[in-house]
Every structure is written in C-alpha cells, then in structure tokens.
Image 1 (cartoon, rainbow, N blue to C red):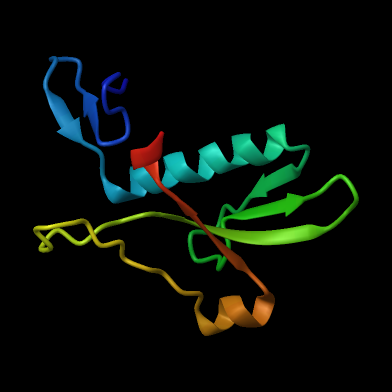
Image 2: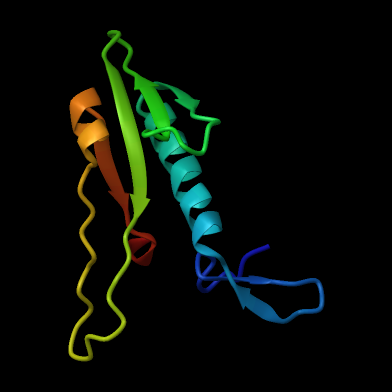
Length: 110
C-alpha cells in the first residue's frame, strides 16, 4: 500500500514504517501505468514475460499498427545541487534494429 502523498517513492509496511520502493518495482509500476494509458487510447497491449526481452510492451492500434515499446522511468542525477539533471536513455543497437521505441515515464509529474 502506498503513501498517498508520494505513492511512487515509498510504501508502508504493515508495521507502519515507510520504505523506499526498489527500482524494479518502480519499473513495473511504470509499465503497468502505460498499459492502462494505452488501453484507454484504444490499443491492445501485451506485456513481455521474458526479463531479457528488448521491449516491455507490444501495443497494437485499432487500425492494426504494431509498436514495440521499452518503458523507462525517468531518473535524475543526485550529485547536482542547483537543479535536477535527467539521465537520458538511448536505445541499444538491437532495439534500433527492431524499431523499438523508448517511452519515458516520470512519476514526479503525477
């Protein structure tokens, strides 16, 4: 169960103490949120089950166009004091070859 003020950065254990979510849990949340968003837009979505798969979601539009998406959660450098600098992600050579799009998700704006 998440903290209502900042549900993506910490969870509350049954004892009532908040703990930070691991990066893989944040990534899973991002993937599932994008499945919800795409489904609301009329896409049919399938989630990859192989952790080594170069994409996370297969999205098929109502007119049959297929998109392979790799979902990444925005991260920021901690050592920059004056402002937060986003860490940019680029597709791997395999992702470029397969035409996989990287979709960045930012929980800070939710």
